Amino acid sequence: MAALHDRPPAVTAVATAVVGALIALVLGLVTFGVQATVHPEAVPLAVAVGPDAPPQLRGVADKLAGAGTAEVTWRVTTPGEARDLLSRQEVYGVLELAPAGATVVLSGAVNPSGTQVAQQVLAGVTQGAGMQAQVLMLNPASAAGRTAPLAASALLWITGLIAGAAFTALARRPNTVSRLVGATTATVLGVAVVAGFFALWDSALPLGWDVLGYLALLAGAFALVQGALLRLLGIRAMALLGPMYLIAPAVAGQVPELLDPVYRALLWSWTPFRFSAEGLRALLNGGSPDTAQVWVFVGMAAVGLAVLLLPKKVLPEKGLAGKEGQPDLADGVVDVRVDQADGLPGAQRQHTA
Image 1: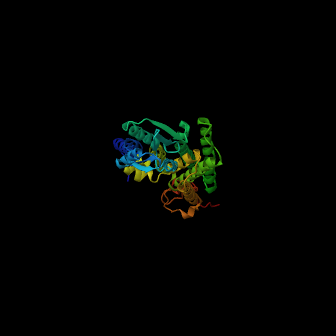
Image 2: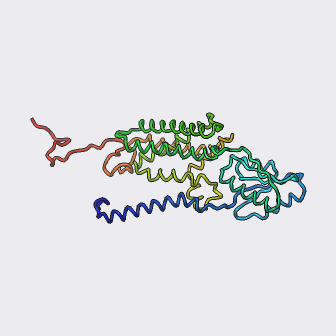
Image 3: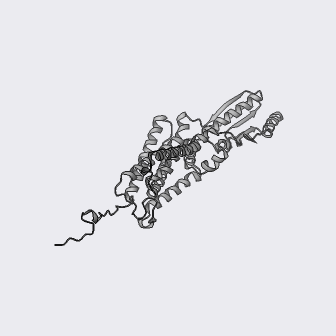
């Protein structure tokens, strides 16, 4: 079968145009398509009434809960329980009703997209009821604090990605040690870059050992997984790893209740960026990551390390990284022999006296 560059230029032009359109289709679906289909569905909110509140306020709370729509779900509880739900991010906002007035309670530890929707809905509810509501922000976060979790995830991913791709393209005789040295160096430098940005953007952002350790876990997991795929697929792994960088802000930047169900199931459910961003957001607000937000990256690092440590002979001979019948160029040097028909000395030609 003739290679594409051996075909007529017109055929090549059509084929490359089709490839460009397919790439645009995929990227449009996983990036702009996510943002274009954002719509609230079952956004969790709470309405809180104290145990000693007059019956009229209890009636307002019950009426709100009974008038729930497809866009919003309500939980009726007490102020203390509602704030506890908010701290665990089981609700994105609280409307506290008291004889002295209403209070909209939000939290800077919640994903900003969820907080924004909650504030809009709760403000509309209070205005519709003819009430004046104060806004109380718990764990207030600066613009840098709201941006940092997702930005750190993307920057750590791109650090390992560029480092691994450049190593794959430039290294002549890579081995396991050199790959591990590259992953370790990318991890350390990536964390240093992110920590420097944190200090530059907002000096109040915490940079204790818990935050730095979590950043190192993320960076190490990313670099090891990327290195493993690049070892298996060669530079072609960039076709998988590159688009994932574009998915990060589009998908992980949203709460699941705002995503179209298809995107929620196919992208948000598994993307590691949502775990990294939410875990880091918790640390920056004085909390700690959930178990899943740690073990996901421990598992990624373990799998990536295992692939990098696999001896070359264990990999399939018709490897994904190398051509059929040839050793993997990423792991060794191909024995090049010169055809004796060319009149040049062959690799195994015997010399006679």
